[in-house]
Length: 112
Image (cartoon, rainbow, N blue to C red; front, side, top):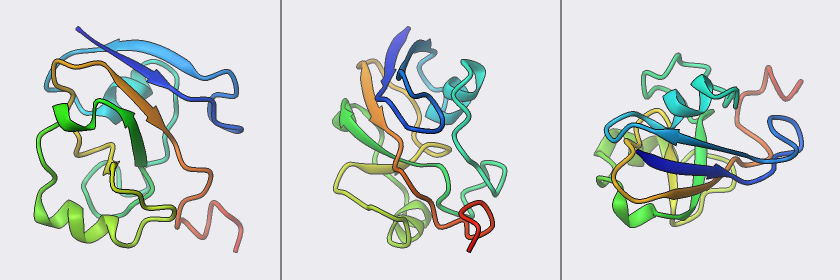
């Protein structure tokens, strides 16, 4: 099992969260199963950037992003070198610490 720690997010988990995930499972699948409702407007089909997360620890343990994910990440709000789409990032053997950005580009959710 891989341990995932989610840093506090003002809306989704103000206290932060910690849970275990199975290697090979996506970060978002593990988060949703454990009550951390990361947004996923495209239903986890790698067609948007609403499930963007920033890995603060464990980034190098993940398989590299494929070209489609990289192209979408270029559009993500708050992009950092350790950003990934949580629907595409599969958990490996190393523990992870993730940060969920404050905003997404989902204009409907952000009420724009």
